[in-house]
Image 1 (tube, rainbow, N blue to C red):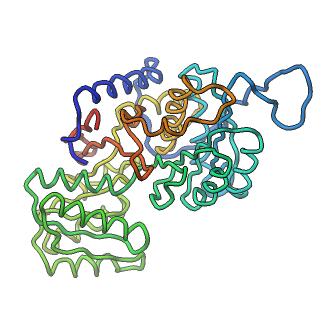
Image 2: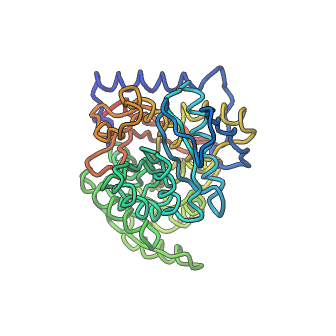
Image 3: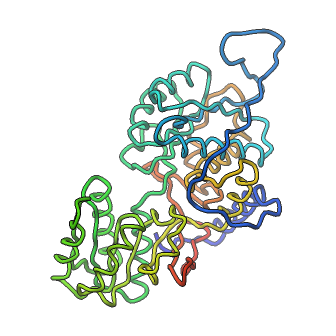
Length: 395
C-alpha cells in the first residue's frame, strides 16, 4: 500500500466519516493512555427487555437487531476478550444507537458451542471470534445459517466463505514500510523472520514488496526461539552485507535485541524496519537501540482519545486490539440504517466500494475478505514515535 492510493473525493468522504467517528468518542478527553493491557473492569450489565411475560432464554427483540459477540471471557486471552466486549458497549453508547443489541458469548469453552448458541438465540451477525482457529470452526456453522462473521483475527487463511477479517494484516504493514524505505533511497534489503506460519507469511510479503518497489533482497534469514538462534541468523546475513534496511518481522523486544548485533555485523548504516506488531507495545518508543527505526501501522490519533474515554469508563487502559471491536460496531450501526429488523444481515454491504471509517482510520474489505487499511509510517525517535509518512485518507 502506498500513499498514491488516495482518491481525493472518496478520501474526503472517508475522512469526514472518520472525523464523525472520532467526534463520537472525544467528549473533551485529551489524555494519552497506554497502548498495552491493564486490568479491565467488567462491562455494564445488558438491559433486559420487559415484554410483560416470562419466556425461556433471551426474550425476543422485535425492535433491535440481534448481533453476537464471540470472544474469550475466561482463560489465557480473557483480558483481550473483555476489552473487546467493553469496546463494543462503549461504541453503542457513543453512537446512541437503539437498533442494535449485542450479546456476548465466551469462546473459551468452545467456539463451535458459542456460535451454535448465538444462532439459536436469533443473532443475524457475528462479531468475532478473536483467533484464526476459532474463525475456521465458526464460519461453516454460521454459513449454514446465512450469518456473516466479522472476525478480529489477522489470519488471512481463515478469511472467505462468509468470514471477514478486521485484524491488522502483517503483509500490508510490510508493504507500506518497504515502500517508504524505497522512497527514502533504500535499494538493498535484508530480512530476519521467525520460523513458523507467521514467519512464512512475512517472508512472502517481504519478497513481493521489495520486488514491487524495485529493490533487491540480498539476504533473508530465519531463526527459532532457541538461545543464540537469531545471533546465528544475523551472522549468516552479514555475509551479504552491506544493505540499506533490515526488516525484523517480530516483536519490538526481539528487534531491540537484534538491532545492535545487526550494526556490528555489516549493517552499521542500515535502517531497521518493523511491522504493525510494534504498535501494540506501549513502550516501543522508549527502546534506545531502535532509535531511527521505521514501522507501519494504523494511526493512533483517534485511538488515543478513545482510550482516554475507555479508561474513564472502565478504570483501566484498553488492549490496543479493542479498537477492532469499536470499529466493528460502527460498521454495524452504519449498515443498520438500511437493515430491516428481523431480516438477514445484508452481507453485500460489506463490499461497499467506499469502505468504512473508524478510530483506526478508513478500511474496506477486499476480494479476499480481509480488511485493507490506510497505514502510516512511524519513526522511533528520542524516546517516542513520530509520524514520518501520514496514512492516506482513502483508497
